[in-house]
Structure formats: C-alpha cells, structure tokens
Amino acid sequence: MVYKSKVTSKFQITIPKELREAYGIKAGSTVAFIPKEDGIEIKVPKKVENIAEKLYGISRMKEDAVEATHRVRAGVL
Image 1 (cartoon, helix red, strand yellow):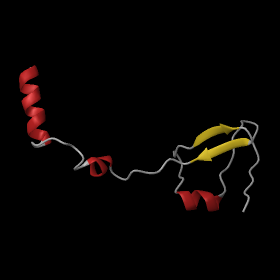
Image 2 (image 1 turned 135 degrees about the horizontal axis):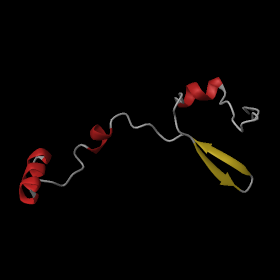
Image 3 (image 1 turned 135 degrees about the vertical axis):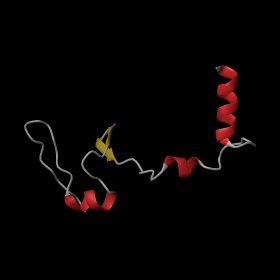
Image 4 (image 1 turned 90 degrees about the vertical axis):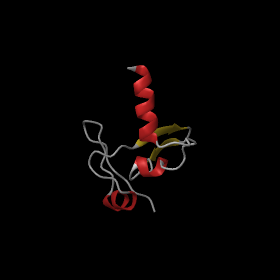
C-alpha cells in the first residue's frame, strides 16, 4: 500500500492515521529522515518503555549499584 501526504507552505506533512496508529506515533514523537539515492526513508525509532528495566541485569557489577554509588561518592567527597 502507498500512502501520500502533501507538503504545506511551512514544509510540514501529515502522517496518515493508519501509519500513526500502526507505529505508535503521537504528538511529540520523533521520526528520522534518511536520505537515499531514490528518495527519503522515514523511520520511527523503537520505543523503550522503561530504560531501567531494559538495562537491569546487564551490569557486571558484583555489588548493589546503590552501595557502589555511595562507596564512590564517599571517596570523592
């Protein structure tokens, strides 16, 4: 399927409703415009719900992060 949108006098475009809903695009969302030889590719970055949850458990630290932070701060201050 091909979706079309006109460019306004302020060089803005409207993303068709079907695409906004399918890709979770809302007001304030960021989209990337990637120049290609045959046109422009528009990408929507994948949404990360909670970065802390995504990063939890990938640390190689053997101690609790809060305890490590306190230890480092104690040595700096």
